[in-house]
Length: 184
Image 1: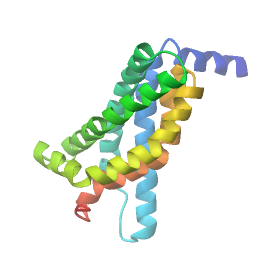
Image 2: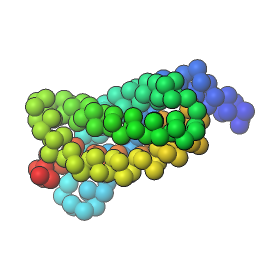
Image 3: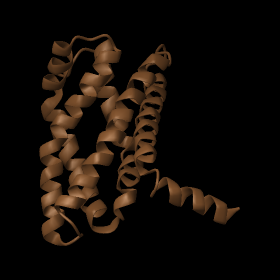
Image 4: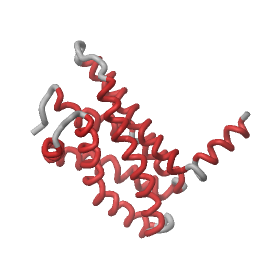
């Protein structure tokens, strides 16, 4: 049984890596939203679970998984290895690309919330400093370990597992507009 499971996992992380990473991104953001809504329900007793919100975050996760797969392949091709120079370059690229990726998530989720593109951009702008501070404080140490220690085919899985708390934060930030307005 264990050898069969190992065989399936090996195929997932070699032959079917794109599908695996896309599914991992979707599952990660879905889990983050479900956990965040559970937390909100505990704090705000009258708040009901919103399956549409979870669907919207899952759609954002599909984009995250697909684009993340392509991103990590490109980083490893452009900056091969796990030496200090390569890791620093990968971290610099991550810090530069983080804001457009988060903007893409705001736009994707906004689309499914029937927001205009303008509103999604405004929501992103209203929260840019907070999102960047959280993104860089969270991701720089996490990605340093990722680029030094994690084999390339498991990078997105590592990020998605570690990312659950960040996905909860992102779910709150993106969806708080429905009840709370922006942080402004």
